[in-house]
Image 1 (tube, rainbow, N blue to C red):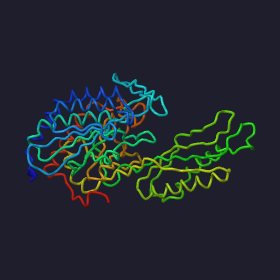
Image 2 (image 1 turned 30 degrees about the horizontal axis):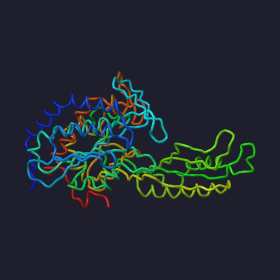
Image 3 (image 1 turned 45 degrees about the vertical axis):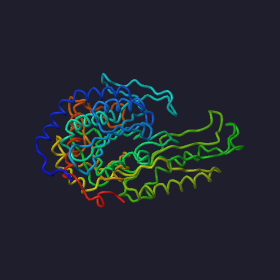
Image 4 (image 1 turned 90 degrees about the horizontal axis):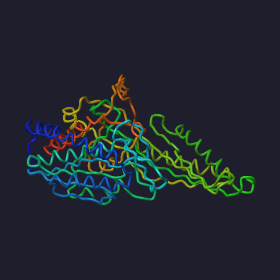
Amino acid sequence: MTLSREMPESLYRDLDRLTEKIEPQAIAWRHHLHQHPELPNREKNTAAFIAEQLNTLGLDEIRSGIAGHGVVGVLRGGLPGERVMALRADIDALPVRETAEVPFASTVVDTNYPGGPFPVAHACGHDCHTAMLLGAASVLAQVREQLSGTVLFVFQPAEEGPPVGETGGAAQMLAENALTDPAPTMVYGHHVSPYPLSYVGYRAGNQFGASCMVKIVVSGKQVHGSTPWQGIDPMPAAADIISATGQLYRQIDAFAPVTVSIGHVEDAGRFNIIGETVTLWGTVRSLAQPTMHQTRQLLERTAAHIAPAYGCTAETSFLQPVPAVHNQPQWIEAALPTLGRVAHRLVEVPPTLGYDDVSHFLDAYGGLYVLLGAQDTRLVDGHPQPIPGGRGLAYNHNPAFYADDAVLATGIRLHTHVTVDHLTGKITAHRADARRT
């Protein structure tokens, strides 16, 4: 049995009233998290803070230590119902030195992280996501007797990807069956962005691209820099492989967006030594999964053929694959009335080759992921532009990225309104149609 689809307007008013009441606390949570960021798979204190706040809400269950430092809170409603709403927030930060001029700016440096030391900052807005979900948990816990079904509050670590050689993120949470008891009938989440404050951007189809990390190890023979003919120099081969990756797009359908970016070159030599190996680290992004498969084949073939021309070998491996974030049209259509009730404005947005591993949850259970505007911008021909006198436009992962605190209340309302409307059957879709196979 599930509560009638005719939800009393008084419950929506209660959600908004309680959101207004919790907003100052949510802002304080956000500022604390922002000042104390932690990198992927190292979110120990963040997880402890989340669990501490959830422990005050009287939830039915709090599960910690999932996929490293993941936390899941379970709230069972007071009315009968079989639907299970999973609300997701990511909790990790980035190795970025913050330049945003806010009084709660991060000054954290992680001296022990692999490859570090690194300055650490919430330059992607995960502090906002975490504070929003804590706020939503507080609001929904206060109206639990009016809820039918169950709500899962999913605080996910390592969305930005764990260190190489470690597991983590959404895929690991699924591997540890974090969301199987009970299993969600819908997953919902949103990501702050440079769109205008409290605008909600949505897209049916692939919203974010597929991604994987690429590692290419080019091997030669070490020798002194004064006698290169006595060894095999892997550096020229590595340089040509980098150049060739920039031409791979010419072998791929021009209407299938793809990028290959080599972001880090690591060698084992010094200024007067030709090293044994050069390792290239990069990322492959594509809007569609078949293009990802084709690009990986081309990249592996390119490296394998260029290296022997220099007497070298090349070994290519692909790590941490993440599927595209795909919003099924059925979920979009069902949710638009709810999103429109909360958002300052709804806008249909173009796809992006950024990635988000919430795709693992959406593929497993079905659901919806949208963008939430958080900056002083306006839309010009569908693209955000800074407004005069504002704080400008700074994209996610930029050292100057910022989010207006006012977005937190909108995020809490989105979580709570979507939850109520799913549990009452207003937002739903047939599982066979709304989950990719």
